[in-house]
Amino acid sequence: MIAEDEDLLSAVEDPEQKARSLRLQGLGLVLLVMLADRLVLALEWWAAEPSRTRNIDADPTLWALGGIIESLSLLCLLAYVLFRQGRSLRQLGVTARWSDLPLGLGLAALIHLPHAIDDLAMHGALRSSLVSGLGVERVTLVGLVHLLCFAAERELILRAYVMTEVGAFTSSAVLAVAASLGLQELYNPLFRTPTVLSVLIRCLYYWKTRRATPLVLGDFAAGLWVMLHAAAGS
Image (cartoon, rainbow, N blue to C red):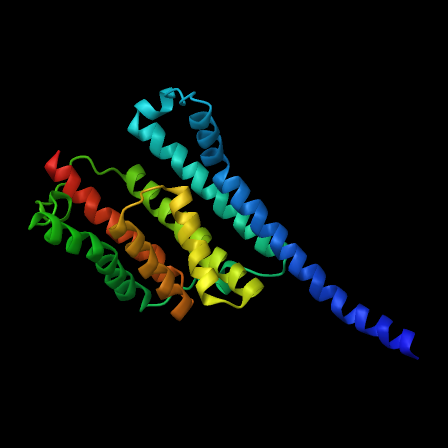
């Protein structure tokens, strides 16, 4: 009787264990593919062999197209991993609501807020990339698509996906936020306090609301603001 009970308990727990293992493998695969080039660059730096400049980097259009392909490939991989688990991007908070737009614009302002405070505290004035005149001379359609794809890549993978999985594994908001924040800095190492605070704002917003679309729109709008002001100052 005891043996039968143990077999029954094992049969109940086994699917849960398999699902957990599958989620962990999926998370590892997505992050490995996403961070592979960063790891290569780190190894090259450690070996004192800096990367040689590629021809594609010399042309902004080719560089943007390469970025679009990279971001879309990662997003497709994420969608495939979720599909294999019987899940979808909607479960990460990807929605299409009218409220996504105002929330995204509000987040864009919050993303720039730590930088604005730092500028005022350190220099007594805001940087030109925030307050100079608007210009569209160097803004292109392919550049905008690249910006949107990159925003979706960061917010859906490094924010929504990582925080959802780490939160499911650990049941800890602190660890979920720390994992997203740490991976963001590893992916795009800009170790400045305003940048870290900006990412922290996005992490806390996602953990509180579990809505990813406003994050993507906010990231895109914040980048577009800088792009338009940078074009005017060039």
